Length: 258
Image (cartoon, rainbow, N blue to C red; front, side, top):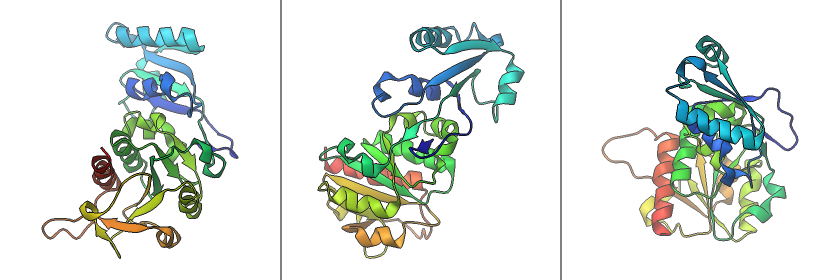
C-alpha cells in the first residue's frame, strides 16, 4: 500500500480465501480501490475447493479477473510458505488517502486510532484485527508503515486490514486535525496517566497506540487531552504487545459507548 504520492513497485500477493474474500467484498469499495488481478488455484485441490472456486469464478465474471489452475509447486514458489491453502491472488496496490485531504470522510462522533511505532508486520496485522473487532471507524498510519506488505498484513489480520478505512499522515499532524473536528485525543501512555477504567472515553475519540519499543513520540503526547494506562496484576514489569493493548483499550471504548 502507498499514499497518493507514491507508485507501487510490485503487485501484492494475497494468500488464502479469508484475505482474498476481503478484497472482493463490495462493502469496502468506498474506501479501498484494490482489485484482484489473477487468482491461482492448486489444480490438485479443485474438487476439495469446489465451493471456493465457484465463488471465485462468479466474482471473476463480474469483475474481470482470471482464475487459473496451476501446479502446487508453482504456488509454493510464488509465496513465502505453504499456508495459502491452495489459493493465491495477485492484486493491485491500494491507495491510502492523505488525512489532511480527507477530513470530510471522518465521521462525526466516531472512534479512530493512530498507530505509531509498531515495528513488526504481524503485530501490526493483529492490532488492526483487534481494532476492527472492537468497532473502530478507521486507522491513521504514518507515511512509512507496514502496509507495503499488504498480503502478509491481510493474512495476519484475517482480512480486516482490507475492510478498515485507513489514512496516512505525519503523526504530529493527526491530533490537531481531529481536534478541529471536535475530537478528544487519548494516548496509551503510563506517564501522567489515569487508569483506563477510570478514564472518560466517550466519543468522539482519537486513541493513540504506540509500539512496544518506541512508544508514542513526544510531540504527539504533548497534544493529547489525556493519557491512560492498563493496570497490570502481579509483578509484571514488561509491556503488552500492541495487539493486546489495542484489544483492551478499544473494547473499553466500545463498552463505555454501548
